[in-house]
Picture (cartoon, one colour):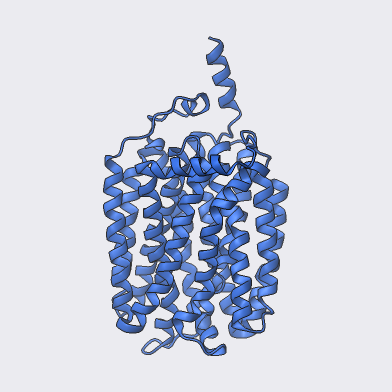
Length: 423
């Protein structure tokens, strides 16, 4: 009887959907997602300008993004350990403020080399938010609202990617890319302050002293779980294909027979709205019918969208980008929330490993796609994406056969592993 009362009291400390605190958390992470992805991907539509201004190849110009995601990926495990000792909110706030400040510095870099240095530092600072966000949500949000909250955060990712790309494309065409970078970095600082003021302190965080041996043991546990390992690989494959398509679509549409302007190409990124809708809608759907079926369906959608872009008609290319983006954000939303649910005692480590694989996939796919584009054109680029997508489909099928993790600890048992949202 006493144990039941304690369990009920523990469950009440989780943030339930519909409450004021839940709304504050959801909107704060929406802002955080905008800041993070705007700073991370703001250079993507500028690759052709970098190639012309600094006299580098398309593949080399893409390093301004790849170096950020690469440094980001290797920094994630360190950020996870720091957050275990220092706290979730302080790490995330520091991450957002410093990365926004570095965005202003990037706007005045005199050479491509100095730009790469600042972009590498941004990768280091962005790791703090990205590795802790999924952990915070998994620790603080009640199970029946986690999918939606995670989906809203990832919606912020897509909105940030959209606003960053469009605003910088327009400003670059009418003023300069430096003004575009500086303007959005200033907006990012304001959103970072909003995040700091509105995010509640952690209720379930328990600081852990810095212990390298324990940290390595926790990472080892997060790597030994077959289900988590499959999710890490799915994230890497989906992200590699996603970044590859958007890295080189601009080069394709600038060239004949399309000959579109930088502003028009930037406006095409409005297809990110499909990702904004997909991530939150698929999050709710996964809460209802289970993550296994939703993940597989989104992987299939993403591959279908990539195939459609092979058509030469511009309208069909845009339709393919919409389907592709819808599938990617739905798949990422489902996989990332699944990691938080499947990991029991190693949530911070599992989340950081998922993102490590995710951004390593981004770095490899983003740069490797340039080699395929230079040698085989757009069909070669799409072929690489479809191979990655096929591998993700196989892993999704494997995940269907892996049983859910049973939970024995009190807070976890509250969340009822047998419900669809835990599958």
